[in-house]
Picture 1 (cartoon, rainbow, N blue to C red):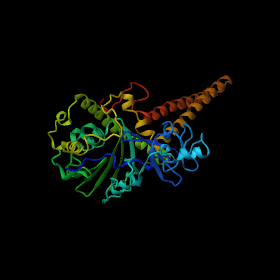
Picture 2: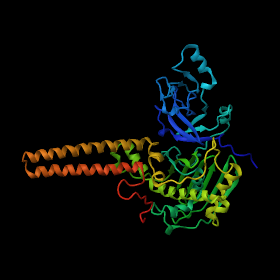
Picture 3: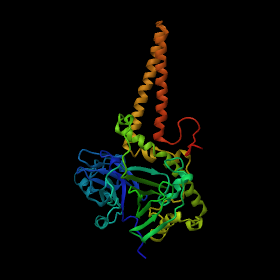
Picture 4: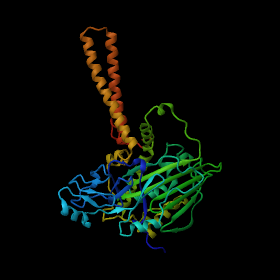
Length: 461
């Protein structure tokens, strides 16, 4: 058997470049370790431990100065792209020079690279990390018949763990039931998977490859390939009899116990969706924000089940082999991933520090939160929220102005028709303000702004 899989000596995609702020530090967590990402004076992305060696303040709270160095917000200590302290404001002369040369004032940095518009981090902080990382390549989208540079990356960070997240992506048949009402998914169109098998050998570093047949009337004749490349990549390709090909590239980055960062894109050789004229007149960030809103229904359905699954599995105190009953060929993907995790990777991600890994019970506000899941990470959605709030403010000002104007017109004895016009406009402006408030809520939570605070994953609920 191969040696144990090393969770740290791997390349992890931490973020699409489009999600990173070039002018401010970006805080991230990987394998339980808090890191900060920032761009130095050479326009190179730097990743280092997210704490100042002075008093352990988070460096991601700091600023990047005009020289491209990172300044701690707490006491102004300044660090360059090599992790070296180059300025301590409370020291001068030789005392400052001595302190800056001390290894105690330095911060650990991590190897990085850019591939396919993603920033990748080598998670190891050993003295040989910058040499070791050259021996491996990140699990990028493989070359195929498709234009792999097309499409945009989408990123979310969800309150469910790595294991249940990856497991779900090797369980295609769940879509017919869990995602009923979305697209073609429906129990009525379900076809049992006839063939689901491992192709070739399973190994610690190369993972495994699965092939399976279709699972609904629309894709029953397709050939599907699912390739797991450790530590976190799933490349799924569907090939249809008519020659059509679709590819799903998904990454499941283990951030901390009970949380996982999803990064993915969908590529197809089919015709592009026709442009919507009404959408085209909107700012680009708002168009993209609306597209992102459309993904929450499916995501909420997944989260609802995966969170319950984690909670129950944790409470049973049984190994998955005892807790799960897997009689169907459709379960082969689940079993294969769990076997890889147990045989090669210690059964779960190798967290950087001792962390509580038992499943947590989340209330609906936490589980269906959209701000932390995606909006705060996505510049398009953040700008959409700002745009909505700006328009809403104009509506509120307009409502107040029209109300005052109506009062003045009444006092002046102006004809009732004109007074009625300003009244109607004021009511419409007020109504628009309420609608925009509800619209803004869609970017912040799946829980509605008004009415009962229920999340309804299905129309029939």
